[in-house]
Amino acid sequence: MNHEPSGCLCGEPELSRRGFVGTAAALLALPALPEQPRRSLPRKLPRDFVVEASWVLAQRGDEQVLLRDASVRVRGNDIVEVREGRIAGTMARVNATGQLLLPGFISGHTHAASGSPTRGIIEGGRSYQRPLELLEALPDEDLDAITAYNIAELLRSGCTSHVEMSLSLRQAQSYVRVARRWHVRGFPGGMVPGTARLFPVWRRTSDQVLTDSVQDTLREIDANRRFALQVNGAEEGLIRPMMAPHATDTHTPETMRAVLAAAREIGNGLHIHLAQGVGETRTVQRLWGKTPVAWLEELGAFSQPVFGAHMSGVTPPDWEIMKRHGAVYAHCPSGGGAGASSGSQPWPEALTAGVSTNIGIDTHSNDYVENLKQGVICGRARARLLNGVSQAGLKLPTIQDAVRGATLGAAIGLRRTDLGRIAVGCKADMTSIDVSGLLVGAGAPGPEPLSNLLYANGLSVRHVFTQGYAQVLDGVLAVDDEAAVARRGGGAVRKIWEQLQAERWFS
Image 1 (cartoon, one colour):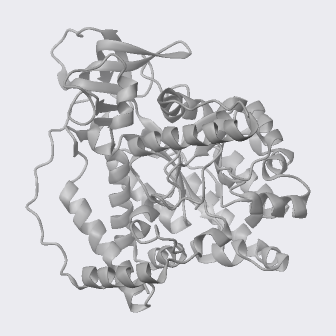
Image 2: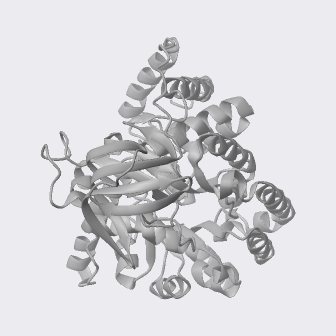
Image 3: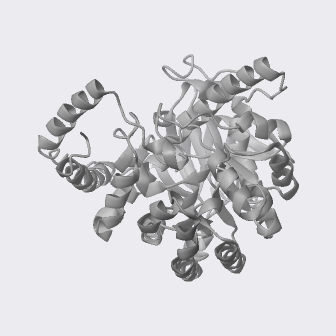
């Protein structure tokens, strides 16, 4: 959702449009994929096991350190031992030879259900608005199928925790239904205004539209507040809802105060698109006399955890506010879809200013490892360009910055000392990634395994655990039948494509 209002409406060249219509029509004319033989699920792990890895990124005080040929013991929900070498005993063992074991990745910004319905059809410049409207109209069974497909992708790429801005209360409820089945750690909130009401308010031509929206927005806030309180702390504390206002330019002081009061009552924080672009910043300055970040500070938003996504319209003084309050900037390098982002985002500036940062998924790409890589590559390009133009002195982002933000940085922002770390007493949220095999490594574990992540992707992830529950084992989804998840998700998404085809949306 990182585009500014005008950014999603650009068209494609005429030849490209004609060519795509033919492809889309042919695709939709094909019969559904035949049902695949059901693959037996991987073995279930007992609640006491050891992971033996060639490398472990462990926590030592305030630092993340690499331990070679190390073992981590999990009992119940927690890590109970971390050491180099083998841990003695007869407990079950997970072989992670040739792999780097990391704390489970935390995405500071997701819209889980909205990834697959838009992926592959918006990259040429089409707006995501209509597909998302059709997604919202699906019955619960289809919505849950699509939500499950996208959460499965997040897990498959090592992302164990999601600061989740579902695009409506219905989508937040769907997220929670799936997350509870699969032991997912989620910080969900329904976006307010939700999809059904957002676009007329966001893309308004008169401020009167915003004024007229207040009562409906207050009702949405209360509905989300009540749902959050119902599920807060569910599944042994895995579900911790946040309040999720869409952005500062779709709210008034009255509605934003109501959001903040609800967030304080729930107790888990605030998740918002923040200063998404120059247009938002100018609007908020005109209406309320301050930048979006400064306005939130004036309203008292930063007394709790805050995750702000995108921030392409940030001003230099805003960074100091974010840093002072420990708020997290969620940088989403693939926001807008692969190759279709509205522009690079100010991750190098945030790092240079000492602000806590995180890599967020946003919407269309659920491959967390790819997003780590893309963040580093695009961030270094941005920093070099700006340094060359203005001698800005920006830090060149590294894979170490990305991994720290994806683990420890996000956990600190959530004010959770038990997450984002591989250390005794922390929750057993862990991800192992092959750093030695074909296309990623050199046939053996290398001396600097974090650098090998720059050659990896989500398919390089081998094992994923959240709070001691195995969700991926040996590269296969362990909490459900992978083929069935794909089949159900694909069947639901085809209904959206077919409606788009009937509306001649592709042409």
